[in-house]
Amino acid sequence: MILIHCPYCEEDRPEVEFTYGGEAHIARPLDPGALDDRQWETYLYIRRNPRGAHAERWRHAHGCARFFNAVRDTVTDRFEVTYKTGEPRPAGDTK
Amino acid sequence: MLEIAPMAVAGIDLKRGSQPITGAVYGLPVTLAPAAPLVRWSLRAKDAALLSVALGRTLPDRVGTHHDGIARLGPDEWHGLLPLGTTLPAVSGQPLGMVDVSARSVGFTLEGPGAVAALTRGCPLDVAKFTPGRATRTVFETVEIQIWCLAPDRFHVEVWRSFAPWLWHALAEAIG
Image (cartoon, rainbow over all chains, first blue to last red; front, side, top):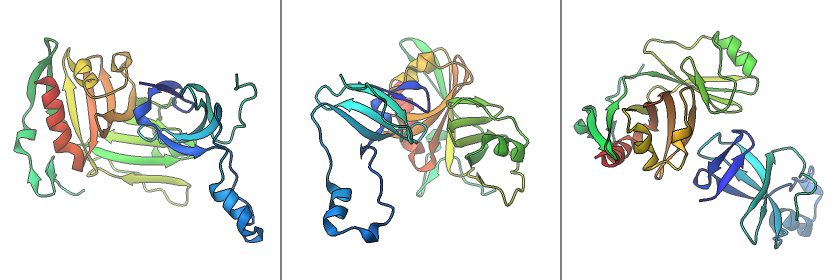
């Protein structure tokens, strides 16, 4: 079982308490009406899907219920770092 | 407050659930019993100090702890377990959520030297590290629960009413 560090509970918690929330740091356009279809499609659907370090949202659904961000290696499934929503992706999180 | 039988769910009243069960896990005795009826509060606030003043109570600081009948489940969420008759203060015009949810969930107690082992049978947390004063939401097998550590060998388990019969049987199985 993977243990995930919840930045709000400040402890390592079992993976089954968490749900995945997709790629992190995707800001909603402030004025969607000004976007053309291709830009809106990019915002809605186009994701980086990297091989390696990936910043993504997770939710501690069966714990504190908060969303937070994590950098996870998509090859090894190892969580490099977790941080609170609103904080920038930590520098130097990739190997 | 609405009077509802402890485990009356969708027409099923599990009479078995009203009697304590004593069993053992790894030879360590443990008793599973329904908790006495309680008043439950769902408390939400971005500003903990504001909520504390509105309630006139000291709230637990750390997420995952309880104090004086109120547990801090998350940065902006608290859950109260208080004696029957406790009433919410009438507060208005404040950015707070204070709701009586007494009928939403039911409580069980697990007491005895085998209480930790019994919870560990279905809960992925390291319950042995739970000290008195800790309280958190987690899961038991597939059901969301809250566990409150009241003493090293005594736990209060909160579960939503509709899951209560299932959890009762799962815990009875765990200690059987």
